[in-house]
Image 1 (cartoon, one colour):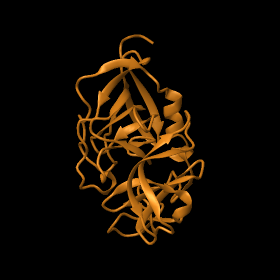
Image 2 (image 1 turned 30 degrees about the vertical axis):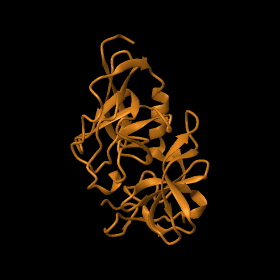
Image 3 (image 1 turned 135 degrees about the vertical axis):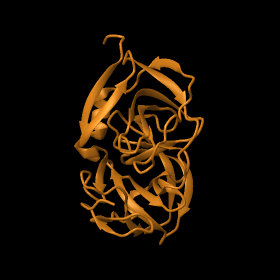
Length: 243
């Protein structure tokens, strides 16, 4: 590939423009320097979210001081926030998208200005797989179809006591699941949660807890509620309604 920077056009529901750094074999190792405001439900819990695509399904988070080997950057036209595709260093150890929730506006410049050049560990095929099937490749069950208009979970209650973990140590290039990391809280039976999806290996489910944020619990301990979605304090809607 020529040293001059190139732009790669990728269609994922709508046209997305990704700016690929010169020399795609290299990545820039940078640190997270700040986190989004905690006023948005999806960003609760601190750190910057990791997802399968910009503003997509929750797959973890990096806290201030943690590092990412950044491969490419995308600035959303819908919320004017920046998203970075790269290798999340540490417990997560996976190529994912780093950035705020899709309803957080104007959040950019949250990586360190200083960096070191490192070998790139993320490929275009990995990125395409994460975003493929409208994002549905990453899970075995979703509260609403991956290609629906739902952007949050389905309200339900925990069946059994379970730890909520902020991260998984994701396995493989196209991950099916992983070992839980970064315990945040214990959820008692009856705790109100919003169920979003279950990993491909059916071992962990992603739920939202108001005041705590998104995280992972043992899949068998939460109902896999589906068919409707809502946000805390908001109306319940069908999967094909926007909100």
